[in-house]
Amino acid sequence: MQYEIGSYDAKTKLPEILRRVESGETFVITNRGKPVADLIPSRASRQVKTAAAINNILRELKGPLTDEELRMLKNTGRK
Image 1: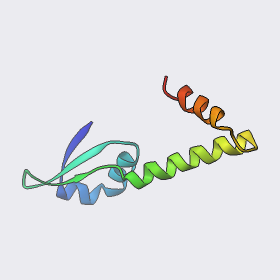
Image 2: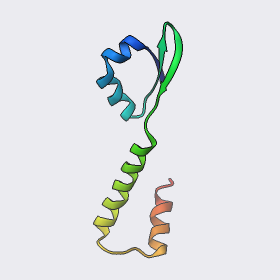
Image 3: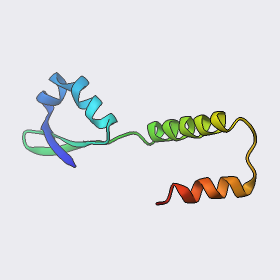
Image 4: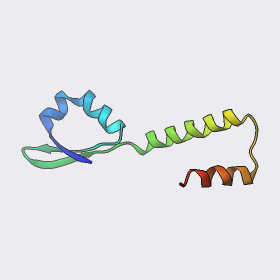
C-alpha cells in the first residue's frame, strides 16, 4: 500500500518511516501538497535477504545439491 506524507512529517518521523519501508510499504513525499519523491524498498535489500535464505538452506542440507534437488526446491517454493 502506498502512503502520502508531507516533507516535514517525513523529516520528523524518518526512523519510523524507514522501518515501514523496510517491511515493504511505500510512500510519496509531498511538498505543499505536490508529490516530489517516492520512497520504496531497496532492491539491494531483497537481494541480501534472498542470498541469506539460500545460504541458510544450503547450510541445513550440508552438502552440494544435484540439479534435480535444486529443481525440486524451486518448484516447492512456487505453491
